[in-house]
Length: 195
Image (cartoon, rainbow, N blue to C red; front, side, top):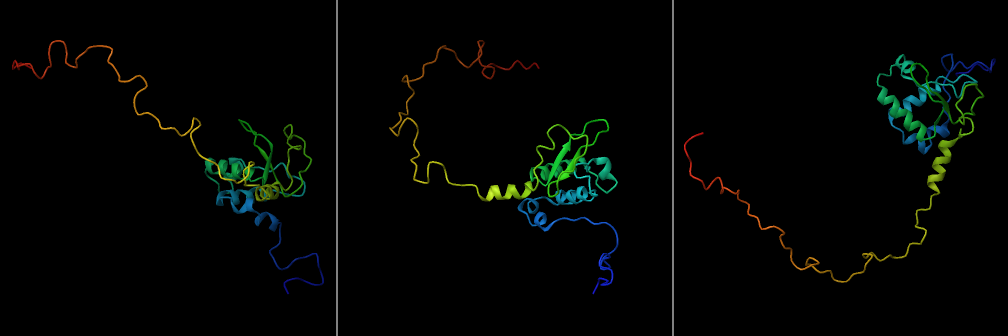
Protein backbone atom coordinates (compact mmCIF):
# COMPACT_ATOMS: atom_id res chain seq x y z
CA UNK A 1 0.00 0.00 0.00
CA UNK A 2 2.91 2.36 0.62
CA UNK A 3 4.17 2.08 -2.95
CA UNK A 4 2.88 3.77 -6.03
CA UNK A 5 2.14 0.89 -8.44
CA UNK A 6 2.27 3.19 -11.47
CA UNK A 7 5.91 4.18 -10.85
CA UNK A 8 7.85 1.17 -9.55
CA UNK A 9 11.17 3.08 -9.39
CA UNK A 10 9.86 5.49 -6.76
CA UNK A 11 9.45 4.20 -3.20
CA UNK A 12 6.85 6.32 -1.39
CA UNK A 13 6.96 4.13 1.70
CA UNK A 14 10.00 5.94 3.13
CA UNK A 15 11.55 9.38 3.28
CA UNK A 16 13.47 10.20 0.10
CA UNK A 17 17.26 10.16 0.05
CA UNK A 18 20.19 7.81 0.35
CA UNK A 19 20.35 5.00 2.87
CA UNK A 20 22.81 2.64 4.49
CA UNK A 21 22.50 -0.90 3.16
CA UNK A 22 23.72 -3.12 5.97
CA UNK A 23 23.08 -6.72 4.88
CA UNK A 24 21.36 -9.13 7.24
CA UNK A 25 24.31 -11.49 6.82
CA UNK A 26 26.45 -8.83 8.50
CA UNK A 27 24.02 -7.94 11.30
CA UNK A 28 23.30 -11.63 12.02
CA UNK A 29 26.98 -12.66 11.96
CA UNK A 30 28.77 -13.74 15.13
CA UNK A 31 31.45 -11.13 14.41
CA UNK A 32 28.87 -8.30 14.50
CA UNK A 33 26.94 -9.62 17.50
CA UNK A 34 30.12 -9.76 19.63
CA UNK A 35 30.98 -6.09 18.98
CA UNK A 36 30.63 -3.41 21.64
CA UNK A 37 28.02 -0.71 21.07
CA UNK A 38 30.64 1.92 20.10
CA UNK A 39 32.06 -0.47 17.48
CA UNK A 40 28.59 -1.10 16.03
CA UNK A 41 27.95 2.65 15.89
CA UNK A 42 31.31 3.28 14.22
CA UNK A 43 30.57 0.62 11.61
CA UNK A 44 27.44 2.57 10.66
CA UNK A 45 29.46 5.83 10.51
CA UNK A 46 31.95 4.21 8.14
CA UNK A 47 29.30 2.56 5.94
CA UNK A 48 27.40 5.87 5.79
CA UNK A 49 30.21 7.24 3.60
CA UNK A 50 29.80 4.61 0.86
CA UNK A 51 28.70 6.10 -2.47
CA UNK A 52 29.02 3.64 -5.36
CA UNK A 53 32.81 3.50 -5.88
CA UNK A 54 34.66 4.57 -2.72
CA UNK A 55 34.90 1.34 -0.70
CA UNK A 56 38.47 1.64 0.47
CA UNK A 57 38.50 5.39 0.95
CA UNK A 58 36.15 5.84 3.90
CA UNK A 59 37.30 7.71 7.00
CA UNK A 60 37.19 7.14 10.74
CA UNK A 61 39.43 10.02 11.79
CA UNK A 62 38.65 12.09 14.85
CA UNK A 63 38.37 15.22 12.69
CA UNK A 64 35.69 13.59 10.54
CA UNK A 65 33.85 11.91 13.41
CA UNK A 66 33.89 14.99 15.64
CA UNK A 67 31.38 16.64 13.29
CA UNK A 68 29.15 13.61 13.77
CA UNK A 69 29.19 13.75 17.59
CA UNK A 70 32.17 11.53 18.47
CA UNK A 71 34.25 13.06 21.27
CA UNK A 72 36.75 10.48 22.55
CA UNK A 73 39.78 9.38 20.54
CA UNK A 74 40.17 6.38 22.88
CA UNK A 75 36.65 5.17 22.10
CA UNK A 76 37.28 5.58 18.36
CA UNK A 77 40.60 3.70 18.58
CA UNK A 78 39.10 0.79 20.55
CA UNK A 79 36.09 0.56 18.20
CA UNK A 80 38.34 0.57 15.12
CA UNK A 81 40.50 -2.19 16.61
CA UNK A 82 37.37 -4.29 17.26
CA UNK A 83 36.07 -3.80 13.72
CA UNK A 84 39.42 -4.70 12.16
CA UNK A 85 39.82 -7.78 14.39
CA UNK A 86 36.27 -8.89 13.53
CA UNK A 87 37.18 -8.48 9.83
CA UNK A 88 34.21 -6.17 9.24
CA UNK A 89 36.49 -3.39 7.98
CA UNK A 90 39.89 -3.37 6.28
CA UNK A 91 42.50 -0.59 6.47
CA UNK A 92 43.73 0.40 3.01
CA UNK A 93 45.89 3.39 3.97
CA UNK A 94 47.74 3.99 7.25
CA UNK A 95 47.32 7.60 8.32
CA UNK A 96 50.10 9.67 9.79
CA UNK A 97 50.64 13.09 11.32
CA UNK A 98 50.13 15.91 10.76
CA UNK A 99 47.10 15.55 8.50
CA UNK A 100 46.89 12.21 6.66
CA UNK A 101 43.86 10.14 7.73
CA UNK A 102 43.65 6.36 7.46
CA UNK A 103 41.30 4.90 4.84
CA UNK A 104 38.99 1.95 5.35
CA UNK A 105 36.78 -0.44 3.41
CA UNK A 106 33.85 -2.54 4.60
CA UNK A 107 34.38 -6.22 3.87
CA UNK A 108 30.86 -7.10 2.68
CA UNK A 109 31.43 -5.04 -0.48
CA UNK A 110 34.11 -5.56 -3.11
CA UNK A 111 37.15 -3.31 -2.72
CA UNK A 112 37.04 -0.48 -5.25
CA UNK A 113 40.16 0.29 -7.32
CA UNK A 114 41.40 3.59 -5.98
CA UNK A 115 44.88 5.06 -6.44
CA UNK A 116 46.84 5.63 -3.24
CA UNK A 117 46.35 2.39 -1.29
CA UNK A 118 49.29 1.22 0.82
CA UNK A 119 51.40 -1.60 -0.57
CA UNK A 120 49.60 -4.93 -0.09
CA UNK A 121 46.25 -3.40 0.93
CA UNK A 122 44.43 -4.76 -2.14
CA UNK A 123 46.06 -8.19 -1.97
CA UNK A 124 45.26 -8.60 1.75
CA UNK A 125 41.63 -7.52 1.45
CA UNK A 126 39.42 -10.36 2.72
CA UNK A 127 36.00 -10.08 1.06
CA UNK A 128 33.40 -11.46 3.50
CA UNK A 129 36.13 -12.09 6.09
CA UNK A 130 33.72 -11.65 9.00
CA UNK A 131 31.80 -14.77 7.86
CA UNK A 132 34.92 -16.82 7.18
CA UNK A 133 36.16 -16.01 10.66
CA UNK A 134 32.97 -17.45 12.22
CA UNK A 135 33.11 -20.57 10.03
CA UNK A 136 36.75 -21.10 10.94
CA UNK A 137 35.94 -20.86 14.66
CA UNK A 138 32.95 -23.22 14.43
CA UNK A 139 34.98 -25.89 12.63
CA UNK A 140 37.91 -25.77 15.02
CA UNK A 141 38.74 -29.21 16.40
CA UNK A 142 38.86 -28.81 20.15
CA UNK A 143 40.32 -32.27 20.83
CA UNK A 144 44.06 -32.56 21.46
CA UNK A 145 46.08 -34.06 18.61
CA UNK A 146 47.16 -36.97 20.82
CA UNK A 147 43.56 -37.98 21.48
CA UNK A 148 41.34 -37.76 24.54
CA UNK A 149 42.77 -40.64 26.59
CA UNK A 150 43.60 -40.11 30.26
CA UNK A 151 47.00 -38.58 30.86
CA UNK A 152 48.97 -39.17 34.04
CA UNK A 153 49.99 -35.99 35.76
CA UNK A 154 53.24 -36.64 37.63
CA UNK A 155 56.49 -34.72 38.10
CA UNK A 156 59.02 -35.35 35.33
CA UNK A 157 61.46 -37.02 37.77
CA UNK A 158 58.90 -39.50 39.14
CA UNK A 159 56.80 -39.86 42.27
CA UNK A 160 59.42 -41.07 44.78
CA UNK A 161 59.25 -39.60 48.24
CA UNK A 162 61.26 -36.42 48.55
CA UNK A 163 63.49 -35.78 51.57
CA UNK A 164 62.57 -32.85 53.82
CA UNK A 165 66.16 -32.21 54.87
CA UNK A 166 68.57 -29.83 53.19
CA UNK A 167 70.87 -31.66 50.77
CA UNK A 168 74.02 -31.20 52.91
CA UNK A 169 72.65 -31.98 56.40
CA UNK A 170 72.23 -28.83 58.49
CA UNK A 171 73.03 -25.23 57.68
CA UNK A 172 76.15 -23.86 59.36
CA UNK A 173 76.82 -20.14 59.86
CA UNK A 174 79.98 -18.83 58.20
CA UNK A 175 80.65 -16.02 60.69
CA UNK A 176 80.43 -15.99 64.45
CA UNK A 177 78.60 -12.71 64.92
CA UNK A 178 76.14 -11.34 67.45
CA UNK A 179 73.25 -9.07 66.69
CA UNK A 180 74.27 -6.53 69.36
CA UNK A 181 76.50 -3.59 68.43
CA UNK A 182 80.16 -3.79 69.52
CA UNK A 183 79.67 -1.25 72.33
CA UNK A 184 76.76 -3.21 73.80
CA UNK A 185 73.06 -3.00 73.15
CA UNK A 186 71.75 0.57 73.37
CA UNK A 187 68.79 -0.49 75.53
CA UNK A 188 71.14 -2.09 78.10
CA UNK A 189 73.09 1.12 78.65
CA UNK A 190 72.10 3.49 81.47
CA UNK A 191 70.52 6.76 80.56
CA UNK A 192 72.68 9.86 80.97
CA UNK A 193 69.69 12.17 81.17
CA UNK A 194 70.99 14.26 78.28
CA UNK A 195 69.30 14.42 74.96
